[in-house]
Image (cartoon, rainbow, N blue to C red; front, top):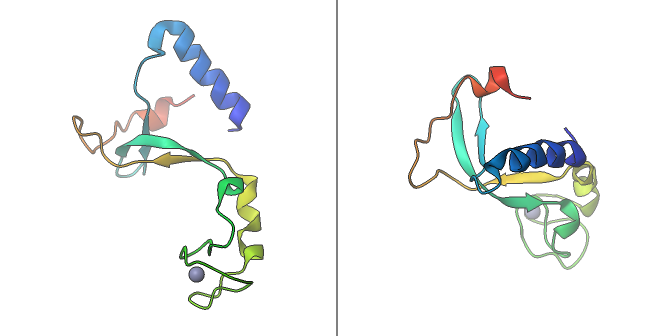
Length: 104
Ligand SMILES: [Zn+2]
């Protein structure tokens, strides 16, 4: 799913009166878990000078800790990430299994 498609799906929900409803992420179809959404993240927002793997501050090129190089992170720019932010304080950590059958 691309960003525009996600916007369309969310806009349909807002138009149907669900605009103030909290968004949850459900994952792991075989053992469904649900989490709150912390926000979105793109690799372009990555602070320069930090290892993309371990986060260590880098002054140049390859990370001495794990061998990551800035080139290793380039493929990630294909994606926009919705970042899960842990369990909802007032909800079960287990997600609805039928969400995976009925997703649209
Ligand atoms: Zn590293």
